[in-house]
Amino acid sequence: MAQGFKYVYNDYGKDPTRITEFLMKNNEAGVAGGAVKLVSGRWTKASGTDAIGGFLTSNVTAGIDQPCEVVLAREGDWYDAAYSGTAAAGFKEGIDVVALATDGLSVDAATVAGGAIAVLSINTEKKTARVKVKNRQFS
Image 1: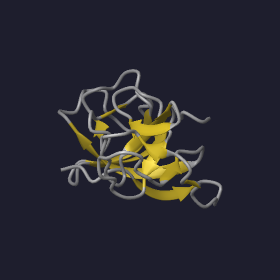
Image 2 (image 1 turned 45 degrees about the horizontal axis):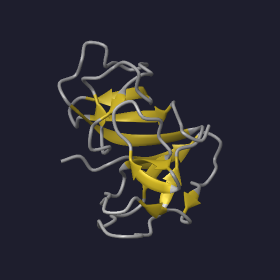
Image 3 (image 1 turned 135 degrees about the vertical axis):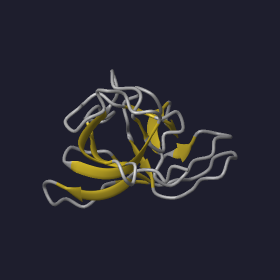
Image 4 (image 1 turned 90 degrees about the horizontal axis):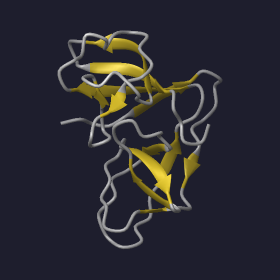
C-alpha cells in the first residue's frame, strides 16, 4: 500500500508552508501524504493529471467540516514517493509528465503523459522515486 508523498527538502532551504484555514471536502477521507487540490474553498483528493495544491500532513476522517493541514507544493520542494502500476517504457529519470495514481498516494509509473510530476531518480528495488511537483496549483 502506498504511503504517500514524503517531503525531503527545498532547494532554497525554505521550511514547508503549512495551510490550516481550509476544510476537507465534506464526506471525503484523506491519508497523510496524499496529494490534494483546492476546489471551491475545500481540499479534495488530487489524482491523474490534476495540478497539485499540496499534501495532507495527517489522516482525515470522512465527515462534515473536517479540519486538515496541508503542506503546499512549492517550487524547489523534493518528495519521495512510491510508484505504482506497471512502469511504462518512458518512466525514466528526467521524465517530467508523470501522473498521480488514482488514490493520490503514489506516482503512476504507467501514465507518463500530461501529469504533474517530474522524476529525478528511481529506486527500482524499493519502488520509490525522488520527485518534484512540476504542475502546481499555486505556482
